Length: 336
Ligand code: GDP
Ligand code: MG
Image (cartoon, rainbow, N blue to C red; front, side, top):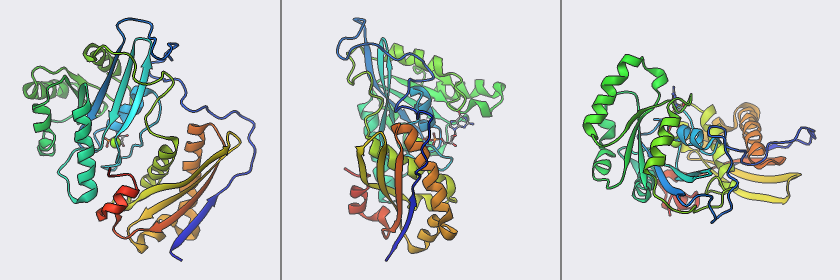
């Protein structure tokens, strides 16, 4: 049988209370006491903000920072994000709907095409667009996204990320270079990782958001399911532990999400799909060791998310060349 199975079962009872799902946002602090549809002020603002940019520029890190919650998985490997995901920041006077998107690059292959398409759809739906760039001048990698930004008929903010990596004197010419490209747009230096420049970005966003009542209840923090996030957290752990190439061959599908005994226990059965038999052994590791670590780490993160004990059953299966198979892309949720 072409299956690898590893069970991550922990029966130890812990007496500490587990984190509740979606704790109050850390970065901006205030959990709104407003009642849905009855905002406290007449001037309530709500809008979609698309976070756009090349792979690895820090879009998912920024989304997590802005909502003060880990929702979107991040990694040093390009194209970690494969879905559009909404991170909702609820404030007393505004509801900010941040859209994380896959990176926009020259698409090669069916998966990449689907990812770029998803990102560009996000662009079309946004009220405000944040173009996140590396702390270096625009280069050829931007040539896919730039024409879309140039014909954008809505407010744009250029955010120069990772400024913790550059010396201050180098920032001014960078700001000038992006100003030349988009003279109307605010150019904001920031560090999504360390939190620098986030308040300034929030202030700009607040100015540009349209007046509207909140679209989502004030306790909702994302538009994706816990089941989806569980699959993503597993995928992130796989990305984290594998070498350069293999992660792109990995997809995760949660086949069972049984919360009938919640909060005592949530049972999750998930499959890690790889493209070739040889890759299966790599994910499982010698004597199942790597899969065990992946399972333990993912289980910890999912427990923190759900505020419940989790029984995580992980399988590794081969789906030959799933990235080029439209049926696989649909089953795995990468294509509508
Ligand atoms: P995405 O592909 O645009 O979503 O990028 P990610 O959010 O996954 O981040 C890619 C890598 O860049 C990760 O290793 C992040 O930790 C790192 N990163 C993101 N923002 C910053 C930042 O402000 N400074 C530094 N030094 N690294 C960052
Ligand atoms: Mg990402």
